[in-house]
Image (cartoon, rainbow, N blue to C red; front, side, top):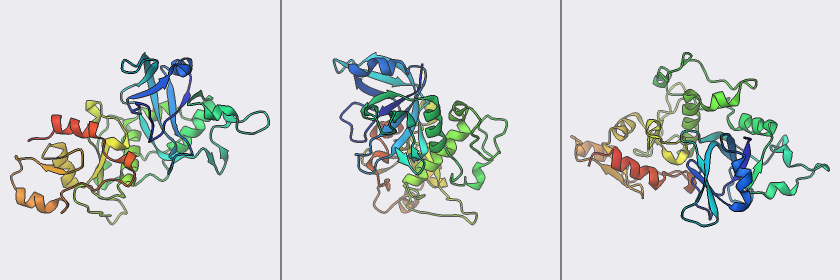
Amino acid sequence: MGFGVFIHRSDSIYDDSPAERYQFPSQYLRRVEACVGDWIIYYEPSKVDDTRGYFAMAKVQQVIPDPAAPGMYLALIEPGSYLDFANPVPFNGIDGLAERGLLNDQGRISGRAQSAVRPISPSDFNRIVDLGLDARELLLPRVDETAISFGFEDEGAAFQFEQSRDRVSYIGSRIVRDRIFRRIVLRAYDERCAITGLKLINGGGRAEVSAAHIRPVEKNGPDIVSNGIALSGTAHWMFDRGLISLSDDLEILISRQVNDLESVQTFINKTRRAIPPRRQIERPHPHFLQWHREHCFKQ
């Protein structure tokens, strides 16, 4: 086993779904197999417009031949392991290369940087994860969220990133994942409720919206921004109970079980569509929206 870097583009020609699978040709088979049972970091090349750099991490569960594409393989991602970074990490930052193992003996970037799949040293892995999960600037939680029980003894303590602590223990913590998920979703939606269009900041400087999973974590929903949506309290309550949902083109669907249709129609955006994030890659994915309509929405 060993850590790795997988290159993924938002405009990829491959059948990738970063939270679920990574498609690759046979030339990278041995490198990917070396990552089975361990963690990889996703990297988007600098040539991509508005690149995210090193933007997420996940654990490789197994490798199988792609049944739909001869000569291609799929690295299957362990369910629940994918995590977008709170802070995308640039390839070359103020302290130099994040992935220093790419430097050759002359201190220049080697040809290894062009490899779509490559091993990464533990020190480089830890450096990138430290930068990506640095929570010193995480958005403040809503006041009523600090008392939510996540099943950990120290659930009320503020999340702090400790350099000496094992990164994997952070990655698996539901508290950490919820805080980071909130950060990336609210940033994508500019702290604005997608259903009502309201952007409310309370007296303590906290955004009065929460980050909702479209497909819940307990139903194998991943912590990826395209499985998230920023919702105010009432909209979140209605969404979780299937009283509202979204079509693939983000039309707001209202359940026939709503007992005050006129008020709900006044409550939602006048356009009858959810306000999407600016970046296409961050918009709700049809795969997750379909799950919500089929398993949660009350027709």
